[in-house]
Length: 154
Image 1 (tube, rainbow, N blue to C red):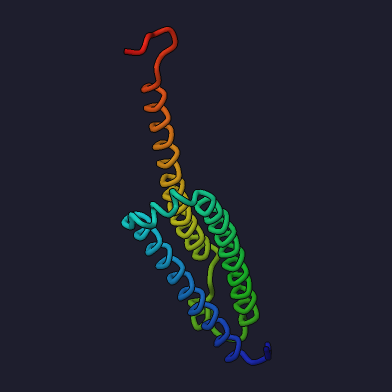
Image 2: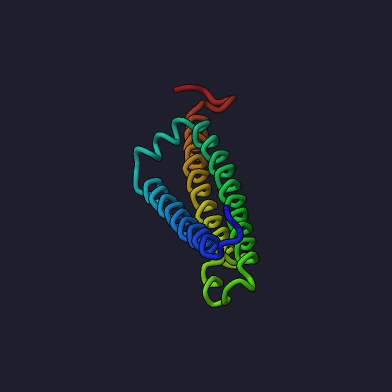
């Protein structure tokens, strides 16, 4: 990139902002759809219950994906900050400061996505836990139906 042309730097700053915000909202939208699907789809819940290992694997993948989202977000913020620093003194602050991705703004996106990610993980765990609870209840019922030692059968 030609760092001597303030117009190109401003375009790059706009590009980072527009694409980051689009990506962040798309990610959040996907998470909301996943939450709705997990809450409302009996077949999805049954599938997770019958394939417990897949539910646990998906939790690991969700955590890895969130860490990648976090690192990517901070990388984009750093690049945005560096471009804004290169523009400092070359044009009025009011022209480019609006497009700079601040650490506070990025942190807000990271926090909100982290909360949504934690909610998806809790949903998956509750579905898996429900399976364990059902199995425990079935086992308890089975044990209570067995004959107790020392009692005679009728």
